[in-house]
Length: 451
Image (cartoon, rainbow, N blue to C red):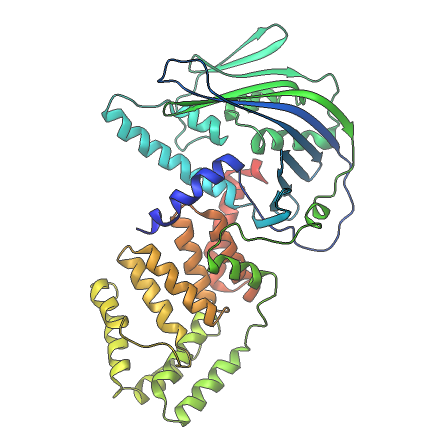
């Protein structure tokens, strides 16, 4: 199924990395006033079913850089850099010396989908009397469900620390640093707790009533039988300007996924795949093919213009279809379009034998096959077909939109936005982009803390 296509390869990296996100677009910007904070980090993972208190312990150095509209969190050789002015971010691999790019919108979108998945998982486990506390999922993902999980928060003081429990289980211990946070960096502290830690939103809200950086912070959550506890201990804090856009300069870009279509989307967005053809060029090609007696190819090219957002006139499509009426390929294509909704398997069976290689507009056949593969639930085959189509013609706006939706349905929101951003680069403001614009506006409205 389309959903299974990327869940297995996506969920773990998104949860562990807090999200590998995207390119810092635009020209150079001056460094913002900021702070650099260094923590000793200890992460302990234990199996609660084993009865043993021992677990896997990982130690690292956590370096945080705060600015009014930027945040960077480096854990060992992996660093996340967020630019909130451009709503973009990037993941730096300092060991591999690469920078991976994507849209900031992918993070809240993924977390919302993952919370839906956790609720469904809880319902299944409840049948076996093993229902998890969904407040743990809200803590791990830093986001409340809709409707919210039951979460009763209590706070007490212990040895100078603010200790929080949710549903009678301790989840957070906080000791404030002596140094106060200047007003211009208060938003950055909120973003640090959202992007860099795993705090229940209700606990995070309590801490932000008096926004301070931690001298020591400990937080934990449980996923099925695995409990993760993370502790930060302050090592140093200093004033230091921070330029988020300059952070990526030393390293070349690397797609987050090895899929060819995602790498191509990055190239299209960066303007490295050439220039989109003029709308009139599709019509000229279709007319030429009609004049050469190649009606089927003329129809494909006219149809391609619509996939590219150029909108060939209905009259031209009818002329091309009429010219190819006696062509068995046109007959199969027309019949598949009639069947696509009521008999998707039958429609796909008609499309598969049609040879695309060597045909002008042949990439259209790959797009049509991809959409039928989606209708029958074969996401892997759909992705292969989209990849072939876009490799042949990287400016098919409709194909980028559909490929993005395929990734989104499979929980791979980073790749989804990479495809949609490629579509934006091809035709900014095109009506096909309306649903993505509306999705982003909805995320900003419902999850303003992420931006």
